[in-house]
Image 1 (cartoon, rainbow, N blue to C red):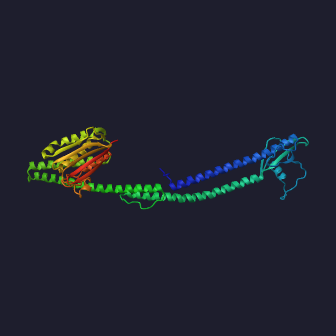
Image 2 (cartoon, rainbow, N blue to C red):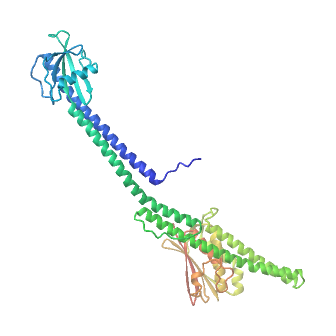
Image 3 (cartoon, rainbow, N blue to C red):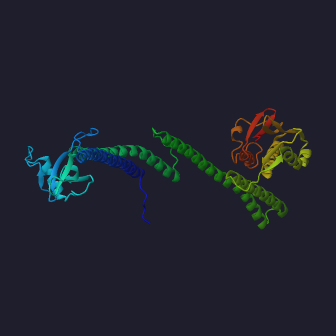
Length: 444
């Protein structure tokens, strides 16, 4: 299929030129209609007045029309009966003779009582006629010369078209400059967008004077930075995934080979293989879950839930571990239900990860709070451990970042993604008395 797309520059030039041409044509047509009507109106008024005066025998007009007619008596074959003597002009031909010659050439109607128009060369006449009883087969013809206005109309039309031609040339020139000013930044942005598609993340440094183009540049630069960071994160992610998967797989392989060659106790090696397989399965499941959250999966179903119940159920799952480690759980829940529209399983998983994290570092207690304060839901899970180091604190939510006692570095990333998917935020406070993770949701 043939490509019919045109450039912005071409379309802009065609549009503006067409608009100018349309306006001038309309002005020209309107001018010619108005001046023609004026000429016809003026001629009609003068000739009607002359006809009335001739038929009534009056020598004084009822009103003074803008112009004066001339009179000639002609035979049916356009022979002049009156006046017998016709004064010639400087060019050797009188106005009357020109009119009569034009009337003869056009076979003008003498028997009609209507006002007729005769155009001969550069001359324009309007006339009307009556039958003259004193002259055998003679007609009294009243005519008025409108040549001056007719020439004025033609000259002004020529001037208008000359102005149109100049305006069109100027329009094409100016439109070309303006369109270049618009299209060049667009081409620059297009080139950078193509580079982004090729994986070359380079910001646009050019300064655009147009507000919209400058906003588009800023948006593209911001998108470029996000894509560059995302690309870097993906590379780090796959590197970490490779590392995390390689270790358990190598352990599984070594123990399987040890069993095969009879170098390891099969029961002990089987337990190690099982543990590493479980660890590997958890890691893969966490990665899949995190990917689903960050891709904005639409299979999440939000329902109204009491946050206290979800937290209570989560902590109940850890009762045996709390008792075995001698860890106390301190509850600080609102007396009234804390309702929130959420995806229950996702929040439960986030609470499980935070509780597991608190258990890993707690010395003697874990504190859990759930309150509705000033239109906000505050959920806090804290421990009384030694806190998070200044070195680890900025990275704890990064995928595969493992601090002290960390497992595989995805748990807190999942927590953050779950909270973000519910429109909330998570804050961390740490010190010598432990670490506290606080989730904040705006109650809507």
